Image (cartoon, rainbow, N blue to C red; front, side, top):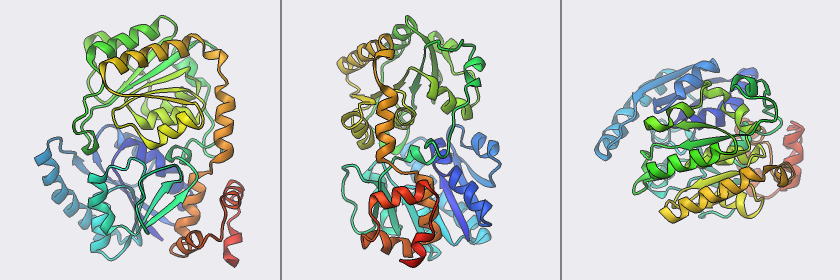
Amino acid sequence: MKVLIDIGHPAHVHLFKNFAWEMQKKGHKILFTCREKEFEIDLLKKYNFEYVSFGKKFKTSFGKIIGLFLFNFKLFVISLKFKPNLFLSHGSIYAAQIAWLMRKSHISFEDTFNFEQIRLYKPFTSVILTSDYMHPFLGAKTIEYSGYHELAYLHPNRFTPNSKVINELGLSQGEKFCIVRFVSWEATHDINHSGMSIENKIKVVKTLSKYSKVFISSEKKLPPDLLKYKFPLKPEKIHDAMAFASLIFGESGTMISEGAVLGTPGIYIDDTGRLYTNELEKKYGLVFNFTESHDDQILAIYKAEEIIKNSKQNNWIDKRKALLKDKIDVTGFLIWFIENYPKSVSIIKDNRVTHLVLKELICNQNFKFYENI
């Protein structure tokens, strides 16, 4: 089988990397395509994946329209050469439309529910994979699973944090540190968002610095006052660091939920929020959601200060254990789903596999059960 995976964000490399490795071991061929946004290419090179870059993303609204036609054309040309049996992505308009044009299936993950984007890829998509938390119903194409995207690469089956990162960060064992994340607010779903003010960015860093070391990961260029806090290691080290951090604070729903599934509490700043961070707050107590208003930003800083001051008094690890008890190894699920597609769709939609059975089978990598269904 040949699978083309289109990447729109660095997190998507992590989402699909374990799937790609496992499928390659089984003899399948994987090709990644991407646009240059932040450090997707660095990650693809690091993990030795075959990939094609279509150049830098456009930032303006007019540029994005131009990009739709330009990137579609480039993806079409590559697809004619690679001849994929199936297209896979996280909400890629390009992969969906080219798959339809080539009469192939496009399978998409979805967790942001940005309907401006969904309207452009859904008509051309065969299956939309979503978690089973409360979300806008997407119709007959939706397949639900019990998990978060982050559990495709941070589930204990897939990831063990390397404690060497502590020394690499110049810290001593047991020393508190926080990771702060700022985004560029240039994605299509970021229109009308402004994020934290410069003043409050500086304020949160200086507040947390009273109690711990602070490292900043930022899509935008940092102001001079914050340059010395820049995360000093390569991007692929960030998850090791997050696993040992005392707090993740910032504007990225992905990084906040990554911290949560690793047992690190998070403060999330976003007006619209994310449905998965809502569940992580209400069901597991691992995330605290705030809006972008000035007053809420100040409240978020106070909450962050409270957490970092009393980090040892909270049962974050127990909360993570409760989460993992409910959720599946998403990579295991995806491997089974793709290798058995399209039969896998009817198996799940006919309710012949309960969540508990699916979880047990995937955790044990025992997929032969399905051959007799």
